[in-house]
Length: 228
Image (spheres, rainbow, N blue to C red):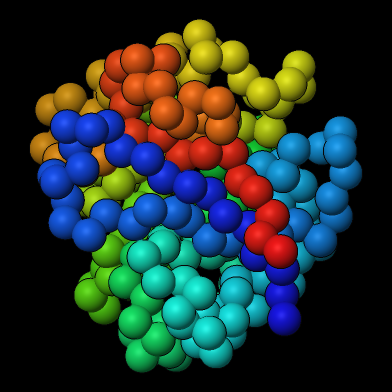
């Protein structure tokens, strides 16, 4: 049995009925390397986990554990057989997919190096398009305004803002920094025609205090916790 990680989702009180049956969480695989001084959001990106297919295997074997959740998959994985995995996940009644972890969380230079060898954001988007065409609802992870505008072309049900690795250098990004990024991304989405939910990462202590959330956000995702 693989270890999983839970990212709770909470929408603003006036947004809960905008999209029907919106998931209450995201489930991803847990990082195999864990250390008190390394945030889970960062360690999840290390090349030490078992890959997307192992989490899909778990969802297929125990679908009730994934009910009402988005399934977070590393969609830049070149070994995913999308036709097979779409069919398996549909049979397991998984309905939401998000590209988490994402190469968008890497620093800009490394992200470009991944893109140069075909393992970048474009591959993730291509696979999200395949999931959407197969009837799944999708969310996309972004880190800046440019990737948000590119994601809007997919017409995802949600866009999720996550900090890059470099943003964790001095600890979890401040509310002021997250508010600034959310505002910039929200403005970049104006005029794109996108109508989904804009979500951002937050501390557990912020989850029940909507007034603390960046104004541009429709909801927040709680920093991940390991599921025992």
